[in-house]
Image (cartoon, rainbow, N blue to C red; front, side, top):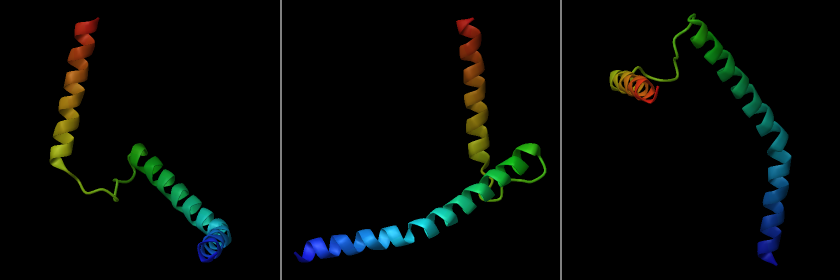
Length: 74
């Protein structure tokens, strides 16, 4: 009986907080999409991620490997 009561209370709390949480997450999602738009337009650097030279090098190597693979397949 106690477990059912606790479960019902947790479910009620989740329902009560649902709209507030949804609005917070929707706002954050909108802000992040706008930030990505600025990043890809070249007007703003991506500020949420620190620059990582190793990551840039790895992406470059992957690009080269994809180009080689594409050339071999053609």
